[in-house]
Length: 175
Image (cartoon, rainbow, N blue to C red; front, side):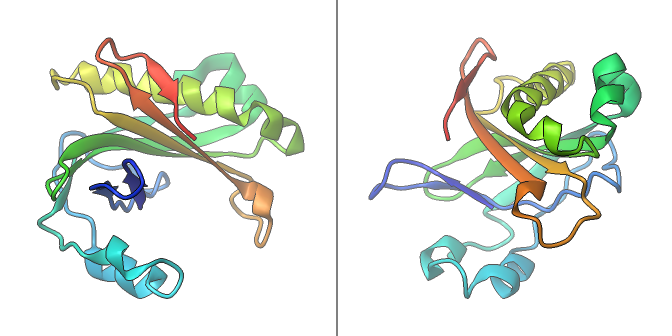
């Protein structure tokens, strides 16, 4: 779940469930499981972040990125797969966010380049979403890059990068 907005003011909440190993069907509409997120994270996060139900957020257009889509660099990263979906928040402060999860076995050398890799994958995803005739582009975008997903307990496994999507579809780094 991503929560975006100025501190102390209304925030947009983007709950999601995206599994890049189980490719979403292009153009399908689904709902994030609010009950699952509450049960999984309510002890770790403040209660205010769970004051929504499944009608407040909708997962819409989803695209996938395969190793073939990322060419020779994908081979160097040992890129496995990626899935990006647009999530619409219909709550108090409406908005939209393109959220992606990408898997790679790039080993430790990839970590210093994670921010650039995420930006590159997010730009690919934005172009593909735009090709679905979705206007305007999402307000925000996020990339979760999972390095060597079969490892357990390593804090370096997950890299998260969040962007504001400008009206010309360029990305401004947020986090």
